[in-house]
Length: 158
Image (cartoon, rainbow, N blue to C red; front, side, top):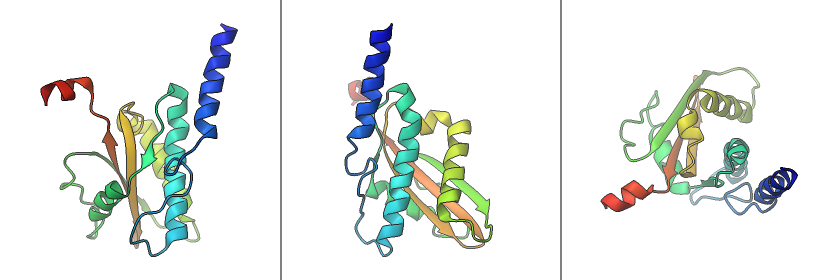
């Protein structure tokens, strides 16, 4: 029993120790205007997702700039519209604006709520990539788009 625990501990520690680009390390997408702020947001999103995944020994999620573009497309109007994102799982969040509340707090609140209520998308073992976008005006809007590794059944059907 002790040896199983040690192996488990070493495996989780190894996941955290070797973060690659997109897994908490430097993340950059083309066409960034506020690169530092966006990279910090992306890093926070990936770390938040992977923190919950490490307990189930699942593969780490990486950041995907193409999924971020899809998420950004849902924020074009006054409200979130995810109707055109049909081939991916999507989570969205809207909150009131509070004076002097940093963007990171809105992001953390959204991801905590998603984890509690939509665990199947947020925590899905086959989920391997995420891309997110946010907008702040009268409200704070936040959308994440997820992609999964195909399961064996999908591979057989194709």
